[in-house]
Length: 116
Image (cartoon, rainbow, N blue to C red):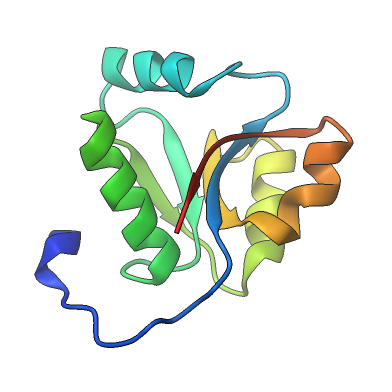
């Protein structure tokens, strides 16, 4: 089911989500896009449950970039996603930007895009 099949009925969140990768991987969104385009459905992106708001952001980002990613759902908010990206379990996450900022500031993670 496409993210376009959903019709918004209210604002769910007022803080941005972000495409976040390990600090030592892709230097920018163009490099991430090139890697994803070269190997469709190979790169993994973690999010909080399928069809949730961050999954919707990831799906819209995929469409805008013209790539296909493998979605990996995590329950329990940003914590499990952050553990997965920091542990190398997934290639990227779409998660709460505020939750990841301490790791971004410390250089462990890198923000490639911000979505709202």
